[in-house]
Image 1: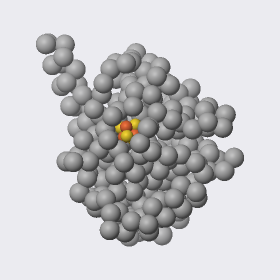
Image 2 (image 1 turned 90 degrees about the horizontal axis):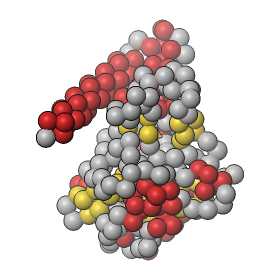
Image 3 (image 1 turned 180 degrees about the vertical axis):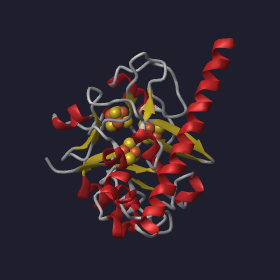
Image 4 (image 1 turned 180 degrees about the horizontal axis):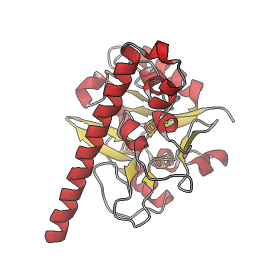
Length: 254
Ligand code: SF4
Ligand code: SF4
Ligand code: SF4
């Protein structure tokens, strides 16, 4: 099967949340409204100024979650989806530290916690259907199809209305490309997207890739950058875990 992609046109999103609702139904997740990605919300629509930004796993072409997982619990499939195998996972949460988009979430509430994130509705896709979130989107803000077709539509849309759209397809080049692409009428950094991630696939900086390179080559910026990057992500995750615990304590006290 050819590689697929989601194309999200931010100018068309009206924040109706139908995609998030459909995702919950599709994945048997609790029917509660959530504003941030969580173990029970694989996609959310965030209000950022006057725009609505849908968030989900970017299904990176060269995913760091795959490269850092010591037991191979993540895989990039030929369809483009990045999938997680709970039976292989040992709960180290390196994937959470490594993801440049802060996507994977942990089931803190469970005695046998798993990592959770969007699965690109892989069963539906293999069945020839579009993901549930795309089917639910009535404005055409979320589209799905073959990767190169989605990329072409994105380029054509920008070309047809150059005064409306910024000339940037987010995900075309970021971190080596992703299977979720965005187009927008405002620069992406103004609506909370990370635009400083570079175009080099991040696995090149992770310990697994580094361990395969002869040590003599490692002396220099790449190693230092890799160490800095993993360390800073670890700090972010520790802080995230601390906030979650605080929130849980407050809920219990309240
Ligand atoms: S966005 Fe994060 S979780 Fe999703 S494929 Fe990329 S690295 Fe993995
Ligand atoms: S592709 Fe499927 S799992 Fe991913 S956000 Fe859409 S409905 Fe949810
Ligand atoms: S269903 Fe479409 S328009 Fe509605 S919030 Fe989701 S992406 Fe936006």
